[in-house]
Image (cartoon, rainbow, N blue to C red):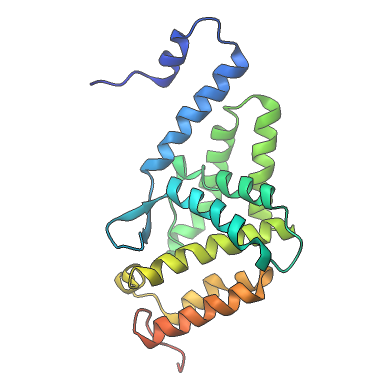
Length: 214
C-alpha cells in the first residue's frame, strides 16, 4: 500500500491546532531513526542495531548505571539527552567512531541536521531539545559526561557480547578502542575499570588487534 505524506495524514484531522500539528510532525519524522543502521551487532549476532534501539538502550543504561557516576547526575536529564542526541542521524547517518575520514565532516553534517529537525517543533520545545543536544556535544556538565560515557560503554558491551565481529571486520586495534573509550573514565572510574578490562580480554582473545607491546 502506498503511504501518504505524514503532513497529509495530520491535515486530515479536524480542528488540530498548529502547535499540536508541529509536535505530531516531529514524532512522525523521528520514526526514520528506526531505519538508520549502526555498526554494532545485537548481542545475539542476528543483525545490526538501529539507532532508535541504541537510543532506548542508552536511556535504560543511564537509569541502571547512575549509581556508578563519579559526580551527582540528573538522571532524567541524562535520559533526555540520550534520547535526543542521535536524532541528527536521520539526516547525517551514523558515523562510525573509528572512521577517521568520516569524522572530519561529522560535526558540520550533524549541525545542519540539528537545525532542520529540532526546528520542526514549537519554538519553546525546540529550544529545550536543542539545548539537550548542545549539552551532549559540549560535555561540560557531569550529566552530559556521564551520558557520553554510557554512549561509549554500550557499543563496547555489544561488540564484546557478539564476539567482536565489528571489531574484527574493521581491524580495530586495542589502542584505538582504548582511546575511543577513555572518556568513560572522566565520568565513572568503576565503569572505566570494567571497560578497560573488557578491552584487554578482547585483545587476549584476538577480537581486537593486540598492539599492546608495539
